[in-house]
Picture (cartoon, helix red, strand yellow):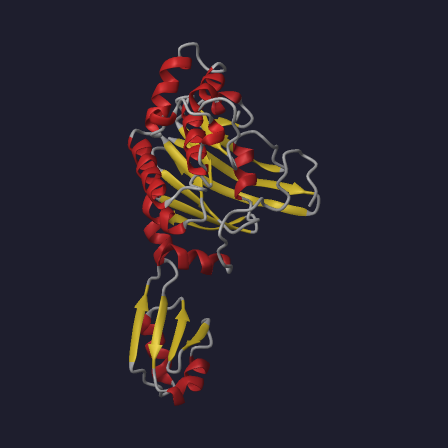
Length: 314
């Protein structure tokens, strides 16, 4: 079952294009990572999928229903940016207030089940103003689970969590997927994404630049490390000029993209013989950096053009 489908999904704010012709399909029962640098359109896309903002062009389906059909969103839970709660109420009371808008039987059983699922039962009767940031994030997930969703949209869900909390959260997301739920999450913690996600999509400047299984995306941008005499570096760089090449240390060149035998053949045709040629697949984080040509930040900021109303400034 397709839980998300986007065809040409586009969002413009004046002259700024936040999402540019996005085409994406997410199958059910998996943890799907939605990755990109700040300002790449991730949060805008998630808001469109939740019906919070209207696309400028294109179409999207959620749970096989075309947006903005509310039936498609009836079993969707979400955390978009930091969850907001009444600080003077307890965690349990906050969920009870939210549960009043759900099915009649949810106010008791669903609240207890959600608190237990996110390991907050022991602090459920503590006021939220005394919660840590990580506890607030888990309470936000509990709120998203109240609707018994088949799809969870999570925007930076582990913000504020310590390493132990992140590890516990990772196990929770995997257990939700094992139960048949689909988790669609954005995160800048790429090491965590690599461990928890089945598939990922990478967006940059509002456009999809890569998607597939985590292992496929991580291996899609190999580098070839060439060790040779320092005196031959200039000649080697000329022979390898068809690929991006950078110098590492006094006697090593790092070549992006080709296979090792292609590098070896190119050098050999020019009479340069390397001491060592080694192909390396550098993992999801390095693949992400190469795909987006950017560095990582310590946290996600609000994306450019992403405001709560339709007339957001650029």
